[in-house]
Image (cartoon, rainbow, N blue to C red):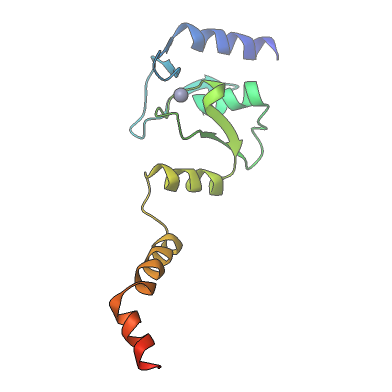
Length: 131
Ligand SMILES: [Zn+2]
């Protein structure tokens, strides 16, 4: 961890409040419309949770991988490394589905419909006709 990184962490930490209920690290800085916060780091505006994943989880900033918030973290601008994991876009979408923030994908709906139809009266009639 270079000096630049250390000072960036210190700078962000001084502006951060720890939420006691969630243990979230919430920076008291500008949060954009989508709920994300950015810091200026290495010449670019970087999302704070991506910065955290880079510093604490060794996320390669040039890779396709991204920093995702765990399901139990309700704050998109939280940068607590315990609330963040490195993953890909697909894992992020799956988590969002489980957390209920995205509509259910078609395969889950289909599965439920099959369960309903197998125990429906129509199905029973069909069985009787086959006798
Ligand atoms: Zn959090």
